[in-house]
Image (cartoon, rainbow, N blue to C red; front, side, top):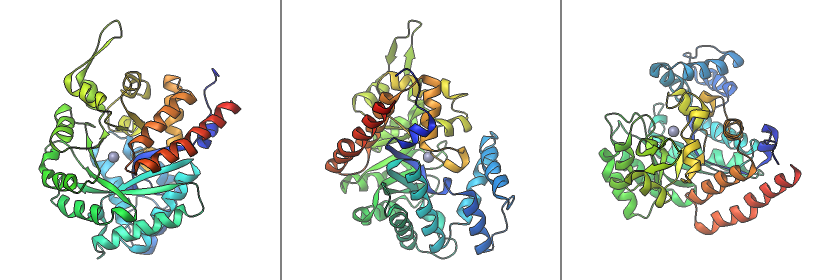
Length: 359
Ligand SMILES: [Zn+2]
């Protein structure tokens, strides 16, 4: 049992994904097809391999402008009903092929209305795509509706998340640049969701520090934190390795607030210099409720299995750790309790038990 699981073995493990952006996970070939069909001429290249490399390099460049440019292309080709159905269906297929059994994929409906679709038409197209792509595969996909923190449509999007909650929308999220746009700017939307007994996560503590995490939890009432890596700013580790938690870090751990961590994505935005130096190692050791996610599979050239393989290499994680991360994620899903339990006991635990047996 000392041997680390291989990427192929990890692919066969039943995995759970809570933080993945629909516009960050397209197949490069699909971007090219959709650009051709819609007459979009802005792509840097129409060669599939070159485009795949371009996305990765631009996200790696350390320049925010180049990083954001990658999304301007994917969003540009996701403006029609057919394009959204296709992208969502392929997302479900790709995740299922990677061994993901439950996923919550997020996107901002307001970014897909420039060719005339209504917000409702966007939501229904994405739901249809996920239904089609999940059909006959061992995966279940829910969606999270994201509002952009620099825009003023969060209440409208929150209302849509509630309206569509029984037909595939699992919750709500808020994303975009943290600096200058605190989550409290959208307090009305969060209070509305709480009154409606609805679930939401907030991108907080990615590039920005503790105040953002504190606001997301103590002012807005977030169920989960998107990233949340900066919580380590409230943890002091002594020379003896002993960790002392500040009050906010202690609160996050005590209340089992899920951290949707995305290691490879964080390297590209400069949160950590290497996987081995990523705060996930410390947070796992301290038993925070850590989950492992992809963020943007296209821009980071990754998958859930690849994230686990990198973590396994950096921290020596084996099957037990991977099962722990996976059950953490399933416990934190915006899915009814009995359904979460059924997936944990009926799919995740037996799946990992089989792999451990074979190892
Ligand atoms: Zn994200």
